Amino acid sequence: MKAVVITTPGGPEVLKLQEVEEPKVKDDDVLIRVEATALNRADTLQRQGKYPPPKGESEYPGLECSGTIEAVGKNVSRWKVGDEVCALISGGGYAEKVAVPAGQVLPIPAGVSLKDAASFPEVACTVWSTIFMTSRLSSGETVLIHGGSSGIGTFAIQMTKYLGVKVFVTAGVDVILDNIGGPYFQKNLESLGIDGRLFIIGFMGGVKTDANISLLLAKRLTVQAEIVSEVEKNVWPAIAEGKVKPVVYKCLPLSEAGEAHKLMETSTHIGKILLLA
Image (cartoon, rainbow, N blue to C red):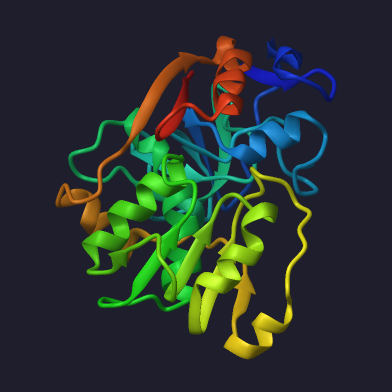
């Protein structure tokens, strides 16, 4: 099969489409023939040598994909060959095929194309696990979202509105989802209310900051970051109702992964950038 290989740590030009071995399918895996994968900031960090994949996982970038199941491991019961799915993966999405643990696979939401479904797994899992599951953001509360034009931002705005949360960029909110990092840290602390919750899920603005940490004690805040893989029960109905829509900025072929990374690093896009296998 073909996959995008990071030939050496560096700029977008180091991404090359090459012939590689097909992934091995374990007993609890499914093999997906990839229709599309979506770019994430972690992909650009991995390309630079700053975000190595977990031990034992694919060396190729790509944290989510959509496609058709081509094979299933002997322990897999829910999925069968021919099923159209999307998935949250630990790597390997920039390829024609990827092996994925069955528990990280999701059906294609009703009303969404197979291609566009690649835009959902990572943002849905990140947003639901951080600001809803862990932070328990609920209807009637307020949320402040930075980086609102990003893939995570566009999804989070739609999902929070669907659940009756007020989206603000003002002082005293209950939950902040920050994709910027360093330079916003002190401002975030000042914007949170009592028992406010701050989730830092990206560092587009850098990792270093000067902050008055006493605010953390004064407001009893929590700074947390985590991703889970199960959002089907809570998020997929909103997508099926058309209340949360895929926001896809541009689609490029796998062979133009370098161009896609250049586009992402300009931060001029709104929504997700997809690569088509």
